[in-house]
Image (cartoon, rainbow over all chains, first blue to last red):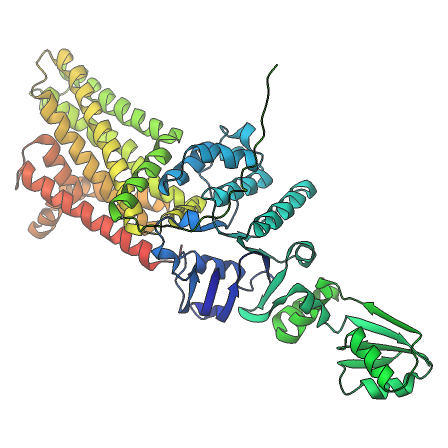
Length: 307
Length: 269
């Protein structure tokens, strides 16, 4: 488990992370979402003891990272591809890491095979493509067979095959009971991968909820209700709903109520329903809406792009 | 016919991290293995060693020929030991570059984060780097000096003198100077900055010392790493002997490495 408690990180007058608290639990994939510059990488560096927090703390399995004596067996992290000496071979890069945590030499060959780099193990890392360097970084993260994995933008630079591979790997690691924490600025990527979402913007927590809840909570998730008594039903639903819009004489668009609730209310009011259809928002829509509510920065950027 | 077996590899259940707390010696020993693996697996290590040996031997041999040809009347009484010491004064920069790169390369590529994530103990990381860089510098300095003496002596038509003693002192001086550079590189982070500063600190005393006769300035210069290393290599000197020179140079190395550990602790990586 990863736990952030009131984490704040300031660089001079810039606040990168602002009083951030959340937990990342085992057995599922937790997506870490936010626009570029929201503080995702900074938070991850603090978790790894690389950056010192200005206030608050980050704990892995209840302990500060710097107290771990064999950290690679506890946490496997992919922070940035290419953080390798360009003239050192993939094999020697991993071997040095294995030695530093008392991990058997045979595990090096194992993880190289796992990420599909066994045939280029002897080649220097500087000659690798971005995708191969990502795979090498993932191999390093898996070296200690850790209970927690933390990947910062793992699909950057990967081709569609590689993206599918990472998705499968991440799902598989969570299915084995590990804590899996994956950051991305791409919502579409998370939609297929994550079970739980932590959304941040400008260093602050925007949402920390199961992915289904995030989508259900969006005003873009609407139920289309067709009924001969649209006006009457509208008045009945209005107090409990997020919004009720009358699209035509017989059609209402309702957000903030489940189909069960709408059906029950209609039944209680003696109103006949001819159609009750749920249109789920995409994660992208839900995310953009969250961002718009919480971040002037995110909104203005997006609007400028759209203009 | 060959039979290939495929095995699933990650599907080992996550094990509880660290059943027992490891002692500091274990962490340091593992760090040593890791740093040794890193140092031996890049070609620049061998290039640096070769450069030091070739330059040291080459300069000693050239000087010897010049003396025999009567072109160096000022140095007519120079021994093989003197020429080896002149050679290593230039040849040392190969290994000093190695010492700088051992840490500055990690900052340049960002692999320092991988290193510190694997070994959070900053002091263990730098102590391990110091041990392997120091050992390689000692070996390189020893071999370069010994070969330089063996090359110069027959040209001069003299004996080599105390081959092992001189080579060991020279290796020790180079090892300690390398540690100063390693500490400096940890604080400065940039390769160019570290090498420039190292060259300035090592050569400035020679240049400034020739121009300035102020007592305070010359006293300060006496205790900078360059003069200390010089006395230690030569085995005699003014105003202190090789023993004190080794001690003071060792203090420089310890101070530089301590500053490096402090920087690694305080700074975000």
